[in-house]
Image (cartoon, rainbow, N blue to C red; front, side):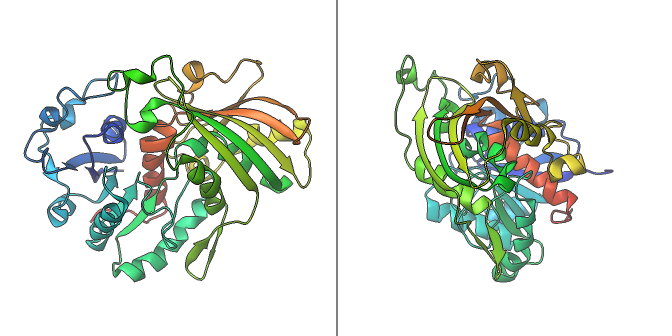
Length: 361
């Protein structure tokens, strides 16, 4: 690629926005040219705007330090400087919906890390290895929005990435019932231990809205496009519990599953090992070479040891065994701010670029 596409990060000062900044530094296809946030940050350099609240272990990339933060609500101004945007804002649902649609209507593609549009019928919610075909609904969305180039695509909930890919590789065996408990890192709430000391030596057995998302979003991902809308699948039946645990990054899931056609353990392991999706076929820059890694050790995957596998973009699985009530049980793990948030959104943008949906203005 001769020239990199110009990228804006709307909501660039929060934790996920910071991840976008980190991941896009030296990206082979994309270059950050605009950062927008609330009016309180507007007019400051990016370095000034995150002073004292930079949450990542790596330093602020040099290339963005002097970018002057813009007001995210000044849509036309921000959109005029970029080819597409990533959106990771902290606002009310209806405000996010309106903001993202406003950007899309300027002809600017929006890759959203927010949940506001996950159930809008003509907006694809994508795990690139799992349901890349859903991006075809963008044509209908563009007609509705009155734009030939703008659109919105969203990333699903971070916790489901720890078990949906493992189940997706087994869809041929028709899973009927799934029970999943997720043990979720504090960065999923946009926090670290400095600003959430009460999480030290503690487990909180509730994360608002998370269980409903974890039970319903997989069904939309496994759904189909009908009459210019994504219709969710009717099975499997999924029930979850979502628990906040005192780790920095990484969402771990314990999963029980039954199947209409029960596979052998060898068949499951082979499916996981061999599974590849569109990002692997296209060799996208952020795609993990091995999407699902299975650990034979009884005490793996571990959050601290394995969340960074494949640069945080892979999914780890272990402890596959038969169960006395369900057919099988296993443990899954994914990095919640890389695969589950900013990294997953960057991979969606790479897929959309490769498939011709994102182009230079």
